[in-house]
Length: 165
Length: 120
Image (cartoon, rainbow over all chains, first blue to last red; front, side):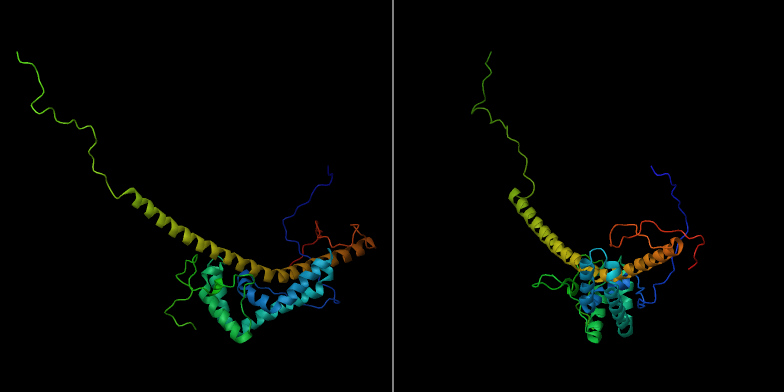
């Protein structure tokens, strides 16, 4: 069929041409998966409207979203960066403990309820962002607030005898 | 010669039934115990399933919250490469050529390999 031989190479090919100056610069997030997972619900709490806006724009753009929705995309990135920045400034210790716990536990949230609750509390007190899982049944305790996690190999997320700080 | 006759009072009854003591409890007790164990087990399984559903929901939403951000970053990078490609093409070919008969953004299948490898 094809007469042209495919050419493979083993080097990493980088195109380092920057975006033109007409596009405003935005600093990329640069966080790895565990901190992002740890901060995801706070990003969702603050940046929900921006996120929805961006996804809507992409849907309405009919395949041209990559170029047409760059403005919305920058807003999304800036908002997420602001959340991470605020968490880093106000709750660095709790944040670190939680995402390191996630790193050590296969990034499964239910093994790390205790650091998570400390982080949630700190973020709620200082930034006013609350973790909420949309669509969860209303007559039950949300899964991240339960005292006992059935699938956790850590004894319990929050021990009864311990004062909940 | 005297004839063989049954003993006085007749023969003793022949034991044809097995005479083994029945071990353990009555079968109905075992049935009931199994019922209790099964009910408890299924109850715990149900609890676990419900919790698993909630955990799945949590995981799903944590990703939903992150997707726009990751997508935005990816798109910016793609557009940057796309524009760089177009500029390179214009420089080499003298005109902007359209490969596809549509305005849509097409994720590139091929990438050009530069003659000299860029160091990061």
